[in-house]
Image (cartoon, rainbow over all chains, first blue to last red; front, side, top):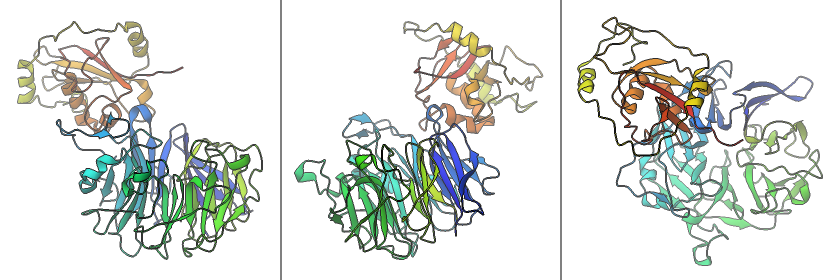
Length: 368
Length: 154
């Protein structure tokens, strides 16, 4: 069983460890004071990547080869020179799109030495040497449909979900906020915009089902059944059984279908968890009670899990990368913008409070 | 090239060419900011200055346009930015000269397109540079270039 969790926060990176007495406690911290926007612990166990969002000084990547004992600054994905005559603006804000990596928002390991990185403002980068060099995936960036992506919570669009097919690492699926679901079968040489059945209530009715106008907040897939995808969308919960080509909306999910985070059991595609909030214009827990919703039957029914979670006066919001499930399918963890962190050792039936005093939490990931 | 990092390094033909291309001062009608006080306070921080000699064995040479480049102490927590004497006839060239020996500093100061990061500022002899995109402000011998954070808020 994994007994270590990494937590990226607005003010540093933390390691949480399970002690021999069964308590989960903060054991190490790095980059204190610096925002950690994303992290990746490779399955080898010793290699950890931490993406920093240093604001004035830009996005940075640091890497440890020894499980966090030492860190070195690594190459950052950067955009090539923007052609002088190119008109590239965010369509909604009509703001000139900066060809600059503003924030690293997704980081995943693919084939041997292969890494994928999604950033705001919408760039996808690939490394084939473990992160020493990065290349912008021009096939996607230069696709004219990319210029129709728009910012959601940020000024510009971003790639937050990168799903690598465990059967074939050349098959990669992306979630873009706001720009829909994209898929490649050849490591990014060609891209397909998919996502039939998704619905965006915030668009004019005639554009509501446009795949390009969709705002997935987070997409995950089941490792044992990678064609089963789950999505927390801006305005609902969706399920796909064919790798994201077609989606079905699930509407009967009390207390709310709004949220950001979703996790699926690595071996059971029908078991899935969400952390709901009221709605887009009121991003707090319903009735100020923190709950997790879980389905064990593919979304036909959901139950509300709340044992160990605050029952009143709680205003925690859980971001899209702040819920994770361990490889064993038993351990779950989630952290909030209020700096609360909870862990469950029984698939969410009950929750242990690790801390209520961490900085706002951006992302959590179990170490192998 | 950065002479403090590479003792006895050679002055290349390009360096000489640069000398011939020292620009005349550009239009001075644009608004300038007098931030002498801020600069002098900033410069009062302890600095990890390094003495150097160039290939001629001189710390400065009238035939070579060399400026002094230093950075805000705010950067020290993230990356080492030792002061240096740099060559170049524009701020861009002076910075590029520095980045030859300190390539990782580049991303902290400039964005992906090579423009000055939004919340950074560069003073050239106590005045803000005017060209934040191309960094074309002319640099002449003995100029002082200071890279700072454009802090805002309270």
